[in-house]
Image (cartoon, rainbow, N blue to C red; front, side, top):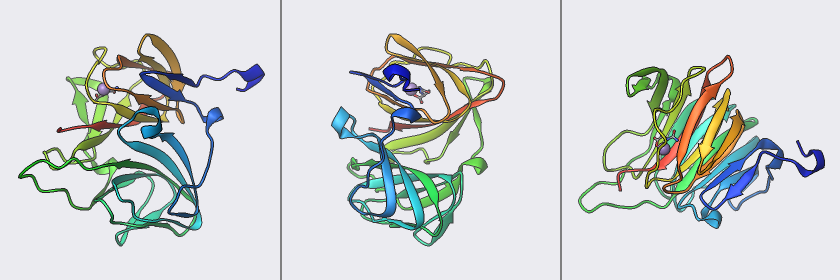
Length: 235
Ligand code: UGY
Ligand code: MN
């Protein structure tokens, strides 16, 4: 990468592919002994922000004005009295839940302004472990498993899932939908169609898809491909 200015990263009006060679680290307000890689934010037109928080020992992230979802990529963090290890997640309502890291750790943080629905109660704190969420096959394809981390129902205005593709598995259709996506490749590799381009992608890559961005993925290689995917939901 960076050979004569080459990169797989691409920024288009309806999507962004961000590869590890182009990531820039910078602190954001409310962080101590930590830094952020902001993958997507309203700066590009998204209605949410998604960043990787990289914590040193005794790292801290203060509560945000917005609701948050946190997924631990590596190490251990603490929030609301819970210890979260690799693969664990938590939902934090607006203005709650500082995040601490006793030792170095990395976590995905998603922030979104909560859209209330009349007569529907706002969600409370929750935490869990991605590996204990039962996998559901997508449209009966046993090669493609979805794990839904946020409970369904109108309280939550977004969803965060993982999708695991066995080598050769693919989305059954090119999707075009009103929801936008933030996606972090967690493992494996494949080809992502975004708009009218087809990109090779691999673990560590990030993708943002604007509403109605045509999208399709097929897994390549000898090991499963897995990604974490955010979408606005229920509104
Ligand atoms: O939930 C989704 O919209 C998902 N199937 N999209 C995607 O994987 N690009
Ligand atoms: Mn989709």
